[in-house]
Amino acid sequence: MRAEAYMQQIRQAEEELKMLGAKRRHYLELATSIGAGISSVPIKSSDNTSRVESAAVSMVDLAGRLDGKIEAYTAMVTEAERLIEMIPQERYRRFLTLHYLCGMSIKSVSDEMDYKEPKSIYRIKSWALKEFQRILNNTTCQGAIMVLDKKG
Image (cartoon, rainbow, N blue to C red; front, side, top):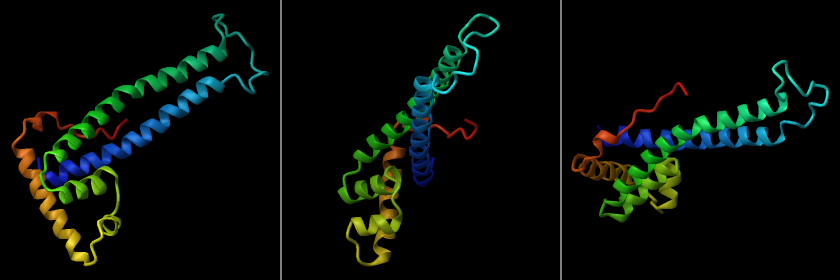
């Protein structure tokens, strides 16, 4: 796999992690506050279970179903961080971390790294990705690379 494609997947994984974390928190908040405002709903359903309890359990189940995806994306990001740490040049590690893991724009990374000439950051990007590609080619993580599932 090419370094830039790999890093783009990691950037997407970071976004997915944020979204899944927010979804999970939302479901758990709903589960804890589900009884509020349901006074007009009958407490028991036809099968003699509490509708409020059933709704809360459903929200907890939804939150739990996200855990596997969260773990998979976390493993991807952790692996990328491990590979980035193998790069000897600090400025390349910093660029890859800021741009791909933190999601900063090229302009923001350029400002953060204090590059005055706009072309400089694009050179750093190119060199950083070449170095990352070298490390990627020399590791056995290729089998661990996951393609993002856009269905879930």
